Image (cartoon, rainbow, N blue to C red):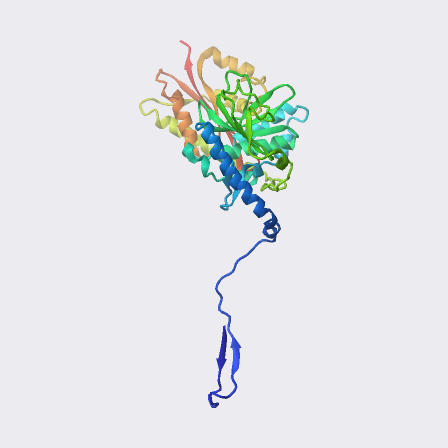
Length: 401
């Protein structure tokens, strides 16, 4: 603001001094990268409008099939789902375990993704107003929704040069789901990111009930085949009589910048913190088992507990049988004197209460037979970024009589 000031002894006709006074109203930071992206703005607006029309047309054809074309990021900016797909590096720790077995590495990567806790379920009708984080954000916060898990797993597979797409559909067990489809030499594999399990297309035990939509970094395809069960679906999305595509072929080749980072940085999980947590969970569970048995004494079998502690770490990577070779004789000796009942529980770590609930639901603590003893072992396997795999084994031992 410019202010004029007259000297007191001067008349109004005297010249005045002008002063500039700055009143601060606020500020805005506009990233230079955003300026570089402005050239894309008009094109992207047209694409977003096209995506909405495409979705509307697909829903008119098959109202009950799922289709997501655009979502908002965590800053409220709308993007085409294709911009979430990009090859990204898994943790190096996972790549170093099975150096000469690529299939075991893929299974381990899928397992790692399944250990990232899931956001609480939201109503399935929200397909039209989803907010998706980047894969880096999903890992740094150690939480994600179904689609973010599928995108992360898809991006990891792309890192190895696999042909991978995200699949939207429904499941008998989980309702709305997001899977990953990989195209192998002679078959298609269906990966469930919430469990880490892989199924062949014609596996009757695959819980996937419908295949509705596919997308990768280039396009979105809507399934217009009459039968959308996995066994009946023809996955060759280049066939326009089977799949309706969002972007025409002349646009598919246009490379649009991904919103994912160039690479994901990982940090090592503090092992002392993990051991403290393991001890706390074990103490808490022992206390709870005794609390759940108010009318019966609770005796702990140290020998069986020791054996279970030897077994659990080997179950994480699926190596070795239930009984470790060095503990074989000891466990056989226990079975000579006791009837042992129990099984290992594995779950991602979210909080202690979830573990308590899972152990309680087994009902093993409710054994009322006289002279029953118990064994309890807890093992936590740490992955990068505080992502933890928790194993709990509670067993009851009843003496043979």
